[in-house]
Amino acid sequence: MSNKKRVLIVGLGLLGGSYAMGLTQKGWQVDAIDVDEYAIAYAKELGIIQNGATVDFEEMIQAADRMIFALYPAAFVSWVEQYRHLFRKGVIFTDVSGVKCGIVQPIQAMLPEGVEFIPSHPMAGREVSGVQNANTEMFRPANFIITPTEKNTAAGLAFAQVIAEDLGFAHICRLTVEEHDRMIGYVSQLTHAIAVSLMCASDRTDLAEYTGDSFRDLTRIARINEVMWSELFLENREILIDEIDAFTDTLQKMKQHLHQQDRESLKQMFRTSTARRAAFDKKR
Amino acid sequence: MSNKKRVLIVGLGLLGGSYAMGLTQKGWQVDAIDVDEYAIAYAKELGIIQNGATVDFEEMIQAADRMIFALYPAAFVSWVEQYRHLFRKGVIFTDVSGVKCGIVQPIQAMLPEGVEFIPSHPMAGREVSGVQNANTEMFRPANFIITPTEKNTAAGLAFAQVIAEDLGFAHICRLTVEEHDRMIGYVSQLTHAIAVSLMCASDRTDLAEYTGDSFRDLTRIARINEVMWSELFLENREILIDEIDAFTDTLQKMKQHLHQQDRESLKQMFRTSTARRAAFDKKR
Image 1: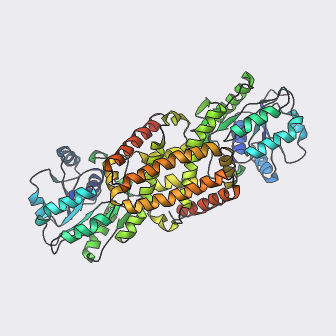
Image 2 (image 1 turned 45 degrees about the vertical axis):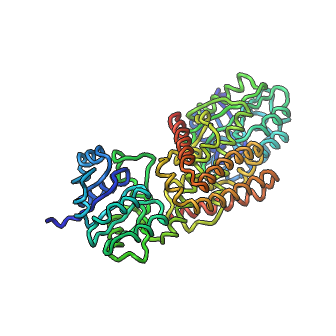
Image 3 (image 1 turned 180 degrees about the vertical axis):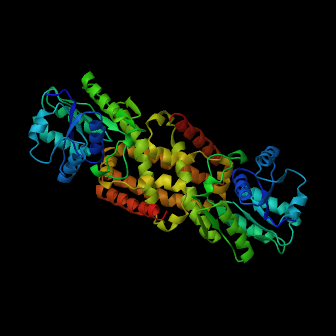
């Protein structure tokens, strides 16, 4: 037996594949399970996993000490429900889910004694999907957020930490599950909701030749994986609805200033936005 | 007398200074008028203008065959009103204003016989101001829009065209004044209104360390020159209010889908936004 670090990745899409690539480069032995034979064959061919399976993977699960679930949230919950009886005592696993409230408690509650789920969220992604787009560059500027609960141990935290370090994330931090979902509702989901709504409001593709950087920057994220994002939005819908309301109220205030030709109030909004946005540049 | 092309620039800020830089590089003799002695001195020192004045510039105006006004819209209108009696017969001038409806007709109506205003809009800018930030790089990927009316001549159009070509704009195109303002209301003003409202909705600067590229891209333009943008917004307020309404209606539809947990309608929005946004990538 070598004392190489080993990990089983369940779900070999863009994120699972990029994890496999980064961890293999760091000397881990990475095995993987996916529903897609092509994804497994591609990853083996590329050398970013050692063993892979689409069926008959019970022994791989039973042998795993460390696992990473790179599935969509609902699939993750049902996968654990279906296969948890195979998890060995002492196994520690993490995930990549972009929402936490609806996932962490149900999964931690259903686990057998001695099995630990340490939730984490790599805040990285691209407008493409699939293992064939795997790359580790997207981790370098990104945040890795660990959302431990009172059920987690030092060993669980250490596993999430070493994954994040070996993948080269720029920042590793901890939030509670609730803090995480509120933060995500604002910095990620609200911005995607806005970009999508802007594109859906009317078909203005005829204006493409006139658009500058500001329009392109603001709508880049309107190219969106509909299956994943509808799931993320619905999982976090109460928080996202609050954020949409707060934003809409402010945009309506701006509209009132325009109606009333209230130049001073408009200027005040521009001063506020300028000052706040500057803080986001400084802290980077 | 040399037969060098000569132009008088009125207003030596970021855009006026960048025009001066680009046209001087292309062999024009550029003279300038500004209220700020420092701006004139700086531009002469840098060699991007030949002569400059802050006062006693009547003879410069009288001598000018070609002029470019790089002033804010309201200042532009009142400047022309005050000094049009000095304009020589045959002079052709253009501007840089980001809105056209409230400016083009009043100015063309007040001009003496034989004086031509050919309106144009360089769709370039930065989050900084002043001649000390002048650069011509910002023109390379940008659109230059000429908005002629029935009062313009072939000579006027040719002047706007050569300015755009000599400054190196990527695309030069023509729109009517009304088409221009409607387009700008969508691709520029609405996006700025959204970014500003997002920053003003609540003070979330504590979240700066968690924000990724999508949030930063979407809010970059929330750092905004409050004097210029309040003027641009108010000049175009009716169109901008229409755009805010159309966008808000769509965002409210998304909120309803969230309330009703209507996954299929959410997915449909995401598919629409993805398809439309793809068109903006292709056409570039």
